Length: 114
Image (cartoon, rainbow, N blue to C red; front, side, top):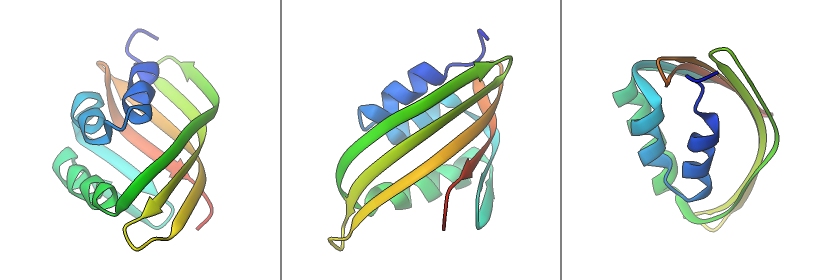
């Protein structure tokens, strides 16, 4: 499990360092999948994530409710709340499953209601 750095990644997110986490913990060829789309490559994922960050006026909470780690895999369940730049209160409950190689995430899939 030495290559699974999920605890460090989650600390970055809790401290509002989402873009830093992307650069530190994701491979150049990462594939990220959400219920309605897949984004391939770190640069494309940085752009997508920056759009999300730019839409957040206030980050309220990020709570991990379950965490599992294995050989080159991590899974966590979380609840995240924020206020969007248009004033809407948002709450997402999701599960992330990540596959790791050489200390970087090479694929991550998010499961949540749309």
